[in-house]
Image 1 (spheres, one colour):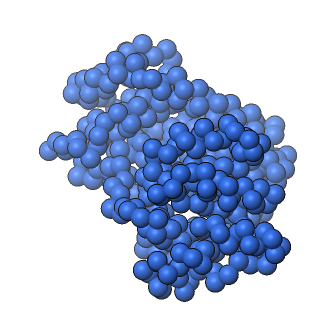
Image 2: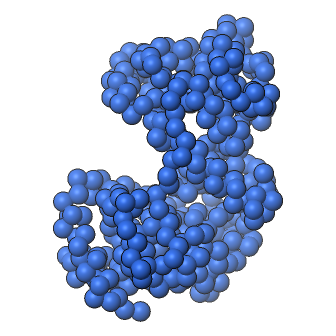
Amino acid sequence: MELTSEQKNKIESHIAGYNKWPYKQENIETHREHHQFFKTRLMKEKVNSLTEDEFREIYKKLWASNIWSNKDWYIDNKLINPNGLLKIKQELNKLLYGEEEISIRFDDFKRNIKGFGPSSISEILHFVFPDKYCLWNNKPKTVLPYLGIDILPAKLFKYNLQTGSEYQLCINVLGVIKDELMNYGFENPDFIDLDCFLWYIFADVDFDEEEQDDDEPEVKEKKPKVSLSIESHEDAEEILLKLGKMLGYLPYLNITDRSKINDKKLLNEILGDIPDCFGERDKSSAKNIDVIWFDADENPKICLEVEHSTNVNSGLQRLSQLKHFDVRFIILAEEDKRNKFESEMTKFPYRTMKEKFRFISYEEILDLYETVTSYKQIMNKLFGEE
């Protein structure tokens, strides 16, 4: 495989911008830290002796696992219980250190271990051996058509890769681009260097505005377009209730706001009252929180406060009343309130429990909602899973 002069020129046109990118070093360091984590935890002499806690840590560290808010539930019910930890370790060892071609090892692992998708498999391979294996996710799927590199089958840009032979083809094509980087000051680049470069292009180019050339692939995946919007406190709560359901939680909405929700069918599908996991005093506090996501055993996992027309302090105060529970606290608001949130996190008492809190913007929650909705639709179409 060889790049055309047009493709090389397109790559070269982004080199100067990448070198000046303010987030370049931070992005590289993040990738290298990810590499060190997986390389160390999945060394050949360690794989077969992984404990359940170590395996949990490894899976939770995968970027591909971030689609699951309740990762422990997924690990228990979709990975360990169906496969068994011993089998997972044996197949991981074969995937990483077997003697067969990677296409065969990829297919064997995907067939023998339930619950690991192609994105997770490629991420493990990539970050244990970044010199040999590429990362295949939304970034190369979006950037390659923009660069005019149309060597891969169009279906790989519309859907995820499914077979080891497809993954090998991705390695080959991305490997050509990786090698091309040597002409622009990259010293012995590996697939991490390439991924960071593609990340820059993905972040820098407005793909919604980019015109598609006649000779680009017919299928071109773009950044998700948000068709929904949050115009009110109730809009945000409705999104959280629907998203919680899709992610496998049992959502609760505080009683005061229920009359303001237009989707009455949705109200009939959520928890009617706070479960008995709380004592009377804590139950009174929990009832005032906008939305709570409970797991299948009705244990609280994520408490969410919407700050639409109010400042973040009121939400922080309500959430902190449940600080003694093993839960995550989320402030959901417009992006312009993030600085206020971060400022409050430096103050007492929030700095003492800072690890429990997260700020999520409206844009971020809508992106997650549309991603999960799309995932559910594809799963239903292909496998009949609701």
